[in-house]
Image 1 (tube, one colour):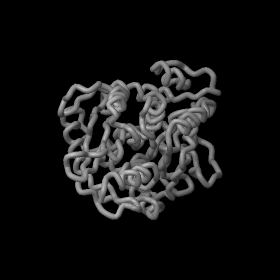
Image 2 (cartoon, rainbow, N blue to C red):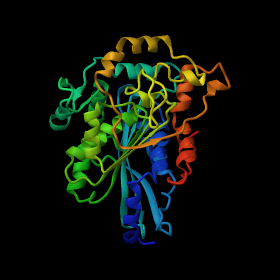
Image 3 (cartoon, rainbow, N blue to C red):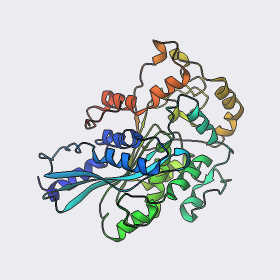
Length: 381
């Protein structure tokens, strides 16, 4: 195996769906290893989990494993207040001799709010994202780092209030690395420094996340691609994201990233927010029902009265904002049998968590895309 010969093959595969299970392992396994609010503990545990990930599967055209390989965390991990988001950069590197290491790709990984508490935390978070029914101007965020500018002209790109605030939190995260070599604090200046040092020439950056972290990964990838000069190709892999913004924002995403793959289970309510909130739709690429009656024809648990009332009260306001998932490659999964179908005691939130969490995504990806994606030996639970 020669790094110089195989590196272009690896990097070409990075930009496709081939390593999607690896990206799910980063955002749906490593990122969830510690859910505490202890910064130092999270930093150590998540970094250890990344470092313990298996070797990257060999893409077609690479016949031998690298002489040496390693996973590293060159930046982060950091958590926001109330453990709402976690962000770190993972790096996969290979070497011929153990002295000179070459980065195959970097990944900016975003974890969203944990909903494993068994209550309506996620639904509350989704509602809070729509606290006021006005989008925020993407142009002001991108060009001036102004995150509160209301978008009055809906023919321009905009993101939801909660998405804008979440991105601001991600970009303001400090650096708290264990080796503390005093690099620039934030992710953007860290990447800019790496570019200036010549360390990112041709190195792909994958931006990935799960759930609300996936929503943030969409805008983070777009922001970095548009504002960090000299950055290598940016690839986007969100898993189960609620919609970050309007149709014009979707155009911004497509123009900014080299390629993107949106993974979603149509029986998962989260990626149906907010583009498919109420009206039944008839499309091969859409879920069969809006959130309000999402599991109705499948005999699933009833939508909570609180959420139904919220949708009835606000659906016209939401519809007017034209929420749209970005038109990157649509990796729609076939869905999983409802747990409620065999156990009527399963609650709405329990069904939501089953359909939404990484284990079912890993299972469905193997079933539906097994011939296109590389298997990866990670136990998602």
